[in-house]
Length: 273
Picture 1 (cartoon, rainbow, N blue to C red):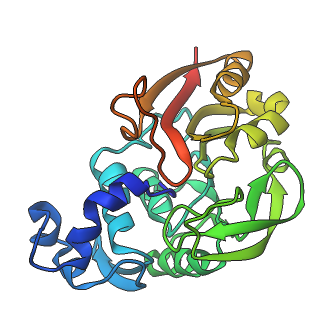
Picture 2: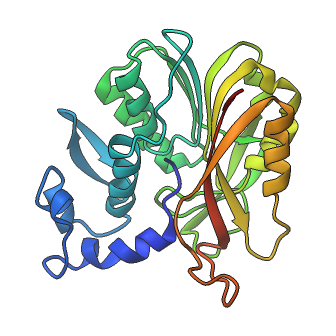
Picture 3: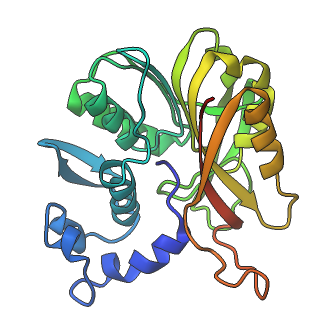
């Protein structure tokens, strides 16, 4: 999963940065024990499934590993073998690796906008020697062109302005609708607040998609778009299941908190009736 939630960053920051003070035994005394020596936002290497890969940030790697390989939030049944998967927001490639472990012959198109993160993605896919994967260094958006992109150096880079960004760059964009001209078994959207704009743009082509995973980001101070997102899915004849990614506000009627400019983060799983 491309975004790493700042709330999780807060919980793990001391663990990763202050060696010996706090540890997560299941990770730091296990297969990823070397991460306890690595500061945050430092490019480094780990062994994953007998392959050496690069990671951009130790804490975000641990979060994504847990979500993808332990919780298996992207697990799905495919009517076709091999399936066709569109992965928007591939980050360092853990999602691609997960999909390939489930479906070795899968055809995957993977988008990642962040220039530095894309280099790591490319390296990791090369390390696994996967075939039938198209890696595209562009941001998925509602039109082709260029936009300002705010990178956090981990898994939360986005088009919308971000005060926590570590750098800003200009990136190329592509319309997702350009890739929905054939049956898609799974569409994954983890694009940091751009998901409603993108789905709105390709709403009339979602009939080509069998299943969708979308991470919804509610930007604080802006109108919420959850109802529109769900309506787009309903009109395309999807049912959906919604879960919270993390508790940002434990008492939202009393106090509304934010994480990286978001006041709510949801995983939405959409499937055919």
